[in-house]
Length: 287
Image (cartoon, rainbow, N blue to C red; front, side):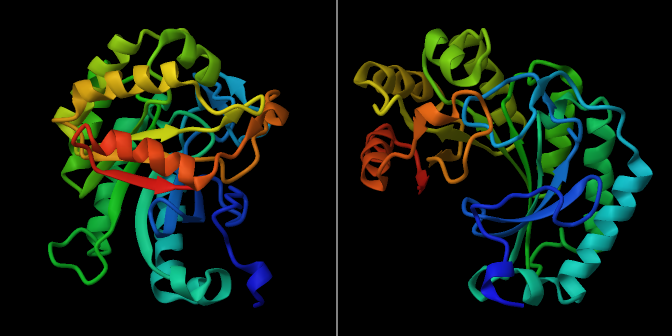
């Protein structure tokens, strides 16, 4: 297997495994191999972020989840990753570490009607594989990558609480600090203060990081007024979140705005990260 065949941070092809719900990626933010669980197999989401890498993205929710298939696929892929030759065949040597199971994919995972049952199913399987035992030689995280829009639903918060009991962690999207900024980036009508209240509920239920994507728009970086509004908003939760994952564009957007978006220099991201750190937050930067 040549290096050209290895998974990379620039290729998160959901079809690489040949499975319906389970797909592997090399995650720059997780720092190794992440086993993704894609519940939104119809490419439907309740947001439409302009940087989204999902082709044919539509508004909506996922179809009913076939739990038996998901269970079979997760068991099979864990066996392959832990005991087979998957790492040697598809992952560069420095990335051959199973870092997490991630609820991510082609839309908002918490919008799946079966999400509470799925969290419990994943916990059961990881327990059977002894991956949740304290002091395990290869401890992994169970991560929920979410836009956070449904954290005011009791069933979702209950699921996030279950997530906490299996070494869970939430990455909660906050891309802008104003209503106009959220509309421009995430294409939703959202009050920032309402969103920050959902973030507080989430952080109370499970360790939570803010995840923020920053990029150039029409050749220009975010304006100073946008940055100040963002800093003001996240300062409200600096004492309850674990930190911030600040990242840029690693893969091309499939949205109509794609040609208007551009990557920002890592020095620019680091400068913003330093301003976030001055608030008292831990920041991880991924270019």
